[in-house]
Image: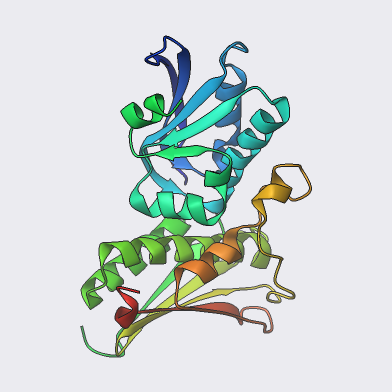
Amino acid sequence: MQAATKVSQRTATTASGENVAILSFTGDIASTSKDSIMEAYHGIDAGITNVLLDFTGVDYINSSGIAIIIQMLLEAHTAGHRRIGIFGLTPHFMKVFNMVGVAKYATISADEATAVAAV
Amino acid sequence: MRNGSSVEVRLPSELGFEKVAMGTAAGMAELMGFSKERIEDLKTAVAEACINAMEHGNKFNDAVNVGVVLSSNKDELEVKVIDDGIGVGDKPALPDIDRKMIGEEDPRGMGMFLIEALVDKAEWHKGPPGKSFVRLVIRLDKENS
């Protein structure tokens, strides 16, 4: 019953010329999203140090979906060389991500331009 | 909307159907005049309560449903989410992102915390099978708090 999560990857370039990987999500972000999200994350070139997660096309996120993002943050934190940024959340989910502490380990921006500039 | 109006929904114990309850709760809250922001809070709380009922209460058993009863009462909306389990025992500790980030705490386990944070009242009631429920209350007079 949950809408399948689709993940697409593209690249943006910062003002200083650094490549940033952007994973764009559509559909639901729930427990059923784990494989598609983590496979996309694991597929990012190891040399990329900044990854942005684009939630612009997402309407529904539940706590199991947030747990997948925390799992990704944990992997990035453990690896020690990769930073995660987030953009495109609705105001409600910006609040929820702050409530559960995600903002402590990922920069949350309103939109892509702000997120790329914050890298 | 008349005071005391009530709506009941029965959901299969299958992930995804919580969105039916979310939509119903959102529609009722809109009729009562809740703001978009408060409706979003309510939707997330209702979804998390339904997911907990499906997973922990009904253990995803196809043979039992999750009941959702929404009642308007003066300036508040009450939502009861009923399952077939034995109810919540001790509430889990508050989620700690720092412990999650070093692998000392499961990345999951945030549902009850979110429910309590997003509505004005959340109570877990233990009962015999089919009688355990969580009761959520969201108040119109807390719109700007």
